[in-house]
Amino acid sequence: MSKGYKEITQRIAKGVGAFAKENPDIMKGFREMSAAADRDGVLSAKTKELIALAIGVSQRCDGCIGFHMKNLIKLGATREEIVEMLGVVVYMGGGPALMYVGDAMHAYDEFVSTGN
Image 1 (cartoon, one colour):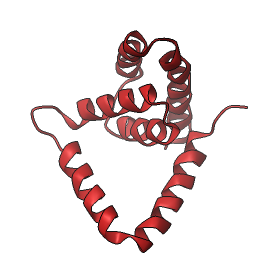
Image 2 (tube, helix red, strand yellow):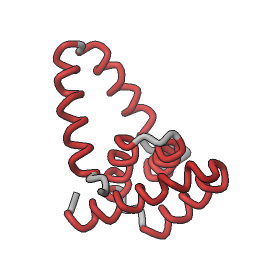
Image 3 (cartoon, rainbow, N blue to C red):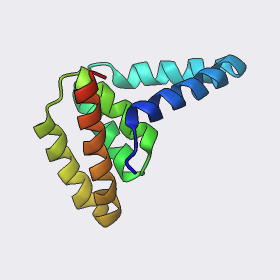
């Protein structure tokens, strides 16, 4: 059975939303940190999202794969860019990373085919 990254991201967003209501200060801080890290600087926002996806794949985090892949598609990342970056993930992470590269490609295909 394959993972549904649209469902994964929706479920996580719902849970995080509930957490945010009960602990708004933590979420405010996280959102501010995320915005500061994601904005264009010397590195583009797309480059930063490629890095974030690479870390998500290497850490085997389904939510990270889903959210960062969705953001990359919105930022106009091409399949070729993602595949090239995932090659570096496999190089650095070996077999365990390779298992999640397949999941990342599934997430790409799912989000592209459903329009996010």
